[in-house]
Length: 271
Image 1 (cartoon, rainbow, N blue to C red):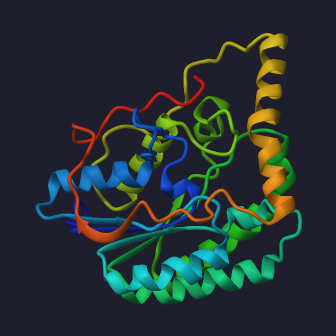
Image 2: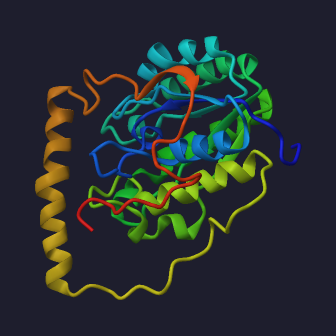
């Protein structure tokens, strides 16, 4: 990897993780690691261009059908592809099909861009993670094999203890907070051969364990506001991303809307 390489364009492909949930801005929109990465790249490269095709809730087949060819046609310096985890969280998941869809996506994207970036995504510590861990690890092993075959980068977030810390996850227990997204942006930045700004793997300060009543109240809020609606969407075949457009569908010059070169991590909802 060339150190301090120049990248003039970035296209991000994926689901809610790449859309930026739950790094909420004051106007209610989401920022996220891809926006933060674009902000930093734009600060060092004149005429930098950025597109973010990600939409929350998308399965790997939808990412392939709706985003991959669009991204490939943009011929960007860097394309990031993160997908498949929504599939692994479904009660019935054909992992062979998911692997095949991901393979097809990588085969289309790798020849079209200067650098394809894949990820072993982070996971929150807890019982949900334990239940779906075998599927996730099967997906991640396939990602490693695809990267080796096609010369892609893999940003390994999965085994980093700090990114499993519950304090870096929103109240929905599925999406990173602003600080979590900031760390992912730094991880991708460093993987691209750019000078580190800080240690994204650094552990958080020791936590003060909340009391029993506080934990039960948080569990009740999670079930009411997030788990119940999520189950309802699964039962009815709906997705949180139904009808939503990509946040930045065109590869256009990027000027940060956040006022600084890197930005300050947003306050997570419900903090």
